[in-house]
Image (cartoon, rainbow, N blue to C red; front, side):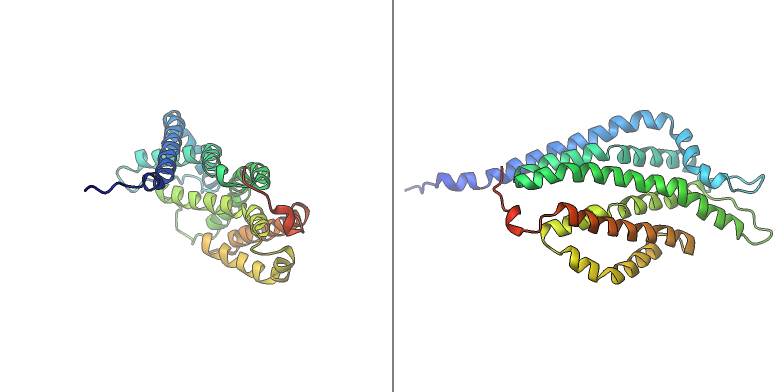
Length: 256
């Protein structure tokens, strides 16, 4: 006698499978979108590298140039730059796909808040990169080139320079997300603005520690990262006071 299975058992795994299929679909869309952006950027990869390296080249001594110490660096370095730049440009689309994937499980109030937060996070990330390029790079490269020992010619490897600036781009882009992270912590109930204000001294110390870890070993770049992080933390507290309801019951809604 064969044992009949419960139809309910066969449907238990279905939602998970559907979520995995949707996740795969959105990952493929993200990969395709990045590829579409990368292909035209690749044809201008050398020009893009010239733009990215201009903050350093502006301070090189007369006659000094950047060099390639590896055989494949003249090709692979601009290639890597074009790929990373394509990912940076695709960030709004990537966040939109993530939002579309998680939105069905959010409350109505969370959905109303998520749109402005996503837009703000994109703007802040790009603002952090712009701050690094236009403010931080000229200062730190002027500092580095000015302290070279006598008789030493500065000739930076193109691949090492790219790794250096990409690290700073990412560090400042993430650091500028602090107001969003602070607001989310307050909104989720993990903390309150009053508690954050009480821990302000620890946060300031933490900003300088993070600045020390994420930037080159010089005081200028550490301070240029730590101070904006602290100011952005204060901005997150201000927006938390303005936007997050004080009454916990006002956030209790059903999912739509």
